[in-house]
Length: 98
Image (cartoon, rainbow, N blue to C red; front, side, top):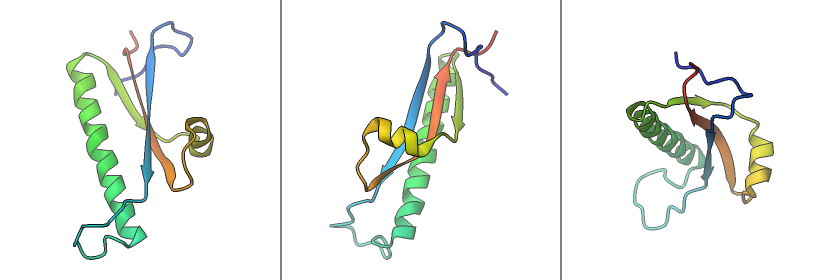
């Protein structure tokens, strides 16, 4: 398991929030795509695929990455998300602990 340097460290850590919004299904013929539960499946899959790519990049660059839960409501306010957007997870990237 990769751990991060001490939080008092001067080393940078990047936080990536993973917000999602309701998809505009116009023009798509896939059955059920206008169903909010089906849409939810898509944005969770999208988030996992993107997070996996971030992990691969971090590993290639010798960085640590951590996909985690966060204070979703506070982060959504800080990011100024619209009512139809929400934070799903966060991902931190930084130098591994020595």
